Length: 214
Figure 1 (cartoon, rainbow, N blue to C red):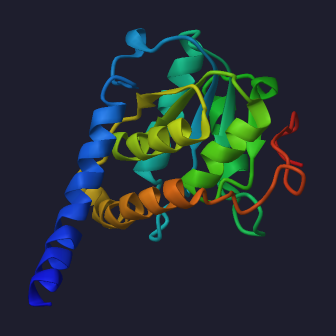
Figure 2: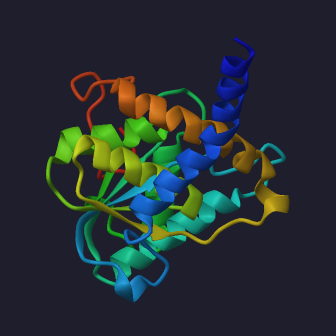
Figure 3: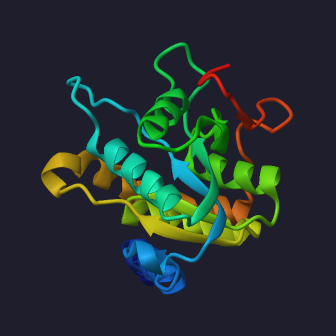
């Protein structure tokens, strides 16, 4: 019986490494650092995060994602932009902020769609697939986040690549990196269990808000 416990313990220790290797293998040819190498896509899908950090300063993860999405648009790589994040609470809406800041960088408001129910990466990817079907998509986030999103995209049949937003150093994002370790383990559970998004499109649609909000 003791050997069974040893094997189980070793498997648990190896699980994060196996999960990381699986992600790296699938996504290595689909993540682009060079804007000119990104294939043209129907949409960009910008994964949400809060605009401001707890101390009130601008969140660098947020800023770099917005800049990357605007660069895709300006380079003619995407036909429209979907901003996906938490926009259902009474507090500052991630998607409203993203739309406003993209517009300030030259992306036409009419070309921006809001998904206010992108509460998790899983929600963002699965709801995009349900709304836009086989339309090609370029996911926009930091490299660690993009890899996870592309695995989810493959699992749900979305035709996806990713453009890497500028990374944030460990000193500026160690909490995010720590959360990511657990998120990667949960990723494989969600894929195997076919976890659905928290909100259906019927309940919370992905829509264009020409005025910047509902």
